[in-house]
Image 1 (cartoon, rainbow, N blue to C red):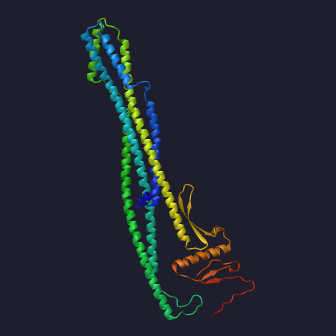
Image 2 (spheres, rainbow, N blue to C red):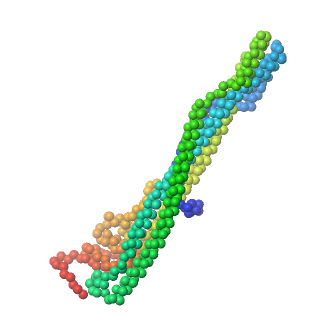
Length: 440
């Protein structure tokens, strides 16, 4: 929670919760892409389980030695040596084209994987920026409304103070010195309220300016991130096109010359009575092909291990963000509970339920009045009247203002809520047919 407090010093809990959700979504998308890529690479692995590099190299050397011995027997040693040399050179050049093709193909695979990771990361960043932009717009809209309301409150107060010199209860004239005292008190209260409104207005305006500046920055970042994502997607498309068009290179002139030389020397050898080397040459070609496949499989296996490690790292990041999400949800719930408890300290029997917690842990705003645990909408007349009196009394104490309270249907209500204001009960009496006003 210490790390959470440090994080929330730069943002709000709701924004950080959304950041957690966005990052988890981005990581999950990347995690879902890894298994298919591992399967694809696994399917590309050649069937080389029974081969080892050391064994193949040793057997290849033995076959080459055996071929050289056969070629030397019953033939012109000098011609045989030349043919073996050119055959080795030709195989080297021919295999180099296949190796170069395999290497380029692997490079494209790695580049495409990297581009896909970059696109997933860029989408996650863009989603985070977009969420923050939308949040800022709502906050700016709320601040504009608050500033407008404060301005209207200030103008409503900026009127001539008028004090009624007649008592609203008994209708008698109020002494002049009391009228003057009331006027002075109202002027002071008006000035104090206007001062507080000005302070609130300045704070709201500062917050508004900060939010607008951040919104402009976020808009620029979204535009730049969108362009960056488009460039990444175009780059990925180009890589995929180039990979699909990749082919084994045509023989170089050097290889053609080596092939021609081998044919020339072989023709000369054929004119001589030479031993049959077909079986050894076929075995040699098979070993060389298997060695090339093994080398390609090793590179593919290395990439598979890299993807598995990346999958493990992403899973750890996902769990870290998930833990952060649980912490911030607990924080939001605790904060909401503190607000609710603070508000309910003002009441006796009434409780205001300000928040609801949904199944997924999300806290949503609410304002439900409960009286002795019963929702206001389910209360009978007596319960509603007592709940209303408890609420009125709380506001009277909080603002330091009391006024007479009229209670209708008082004949059917047992008033249990204690109030500081004067209670005027309106009681129905069937024996009274006509109302009369009494002075005094």
